[in-house]
Length: 104
Image (cartoon, rainbow, N blue to C red):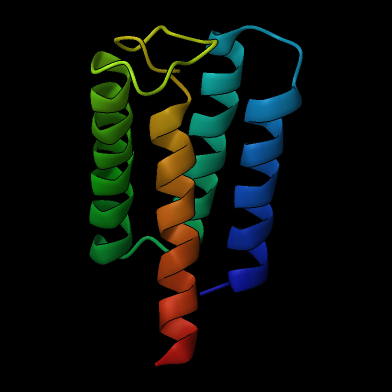
């Protein structure tokens, strides 16, 4: 487990998704690549499952918030939600898993 790397990956993903002046699709591809790299540093079944679960769960939560009118996204390729949301949540899950691993 490499907490410094996973935290840096999450910080980079967050900054890219917030400030990179390019298309939603380009940001999504960059974050997917970053998520893949983060998972190669911790390829355990738990890390992969939690990354996919967080990616879907985060998107689903935000999709529901958009659907009921409590939130909106500038980028909306994925059902009114930014397509880069699932890889951002996946990277966060890897980082949280590394925090948990260190604290045990």
